[in-house]
Length: 395
Image (tube, rainbow, N blue to C red; front, side, top):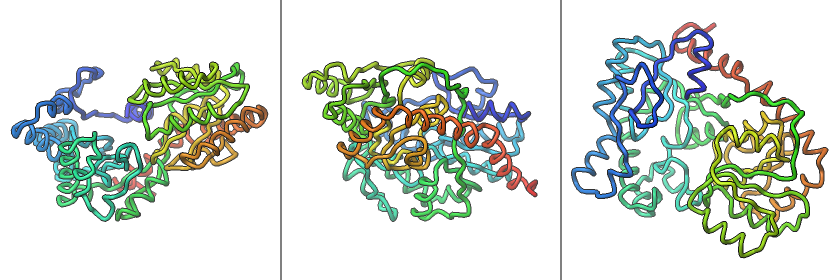
């Protein structure tokens, strides 16, 4: 959102932010419009009827958000509303005043919330599409959200009510960062004419090709089941490759279990856990790596880690799931392997480790792809065309 804000402002547009108050917020001249802070984790710790109703009312339809965005509309008079993540804290209640004042709405989708109550097509770390055909009774039965009956029930009620209220009909254009997400929306009944695929743009500097390459490859991300990190660790431990070490950047619920697993296997330094790193540190690690691995076992949308890796001139090994294949294009900017297949992943890692010339060529292709196709300029041109069409300024 901030990258988009900077991009639009660099082109001379005025951008007004509407958000929620939060202790970690950046200072904003528009914070007087922000909705009040709510911490759902704290609210559900000692759940009772009153707190339950408070959470439910806030997640489904925020009267406060509706009132405050109407104030913003009257004072700032926006031409277009560009929606990002609004569920749970802001809610689609803001669509009503936007519609009332005839302000076109564009919604960039960053997850699967509008078709999956758990937002991610995941249940207990595994891909799940039980709710297809609007069968939203499943979440509380299988406790897919936070392993909690209550959280899952509320997610189910929220999705059901928003469907009944037809809030998505207010949106003029949905932007899907990947063709995978666009196709999923169509598969779940959305009008294909209102969905456009506009790939996320790169917002870090394109690195030149002079960076030093050290003898390691990377995993960057959450240490959790759906990320496929256990499959990756086992592939490395079983791979019996003399060159190259796996450095794992990130934290998550599986971290202690994985560390113990690696320790028991006595990996001879093949795997190193680096923990959480700043964005600057991560970019430096990518620049000096051989390649990055994204072994996800869920429907990744359009991962920024791949875009940033490409910008550093490095290829990516990724699983065939979600939007990953669209980015990597097997053998062009990296390699794909069958999701969850340890043997296939192991063979893919070996292939790149013993073929540095191919790694270099793929890295150059990756850098060129980001530079030519995922630039801020390209994104802006696509986006402003959408805005102009909605405002009746198109060709």
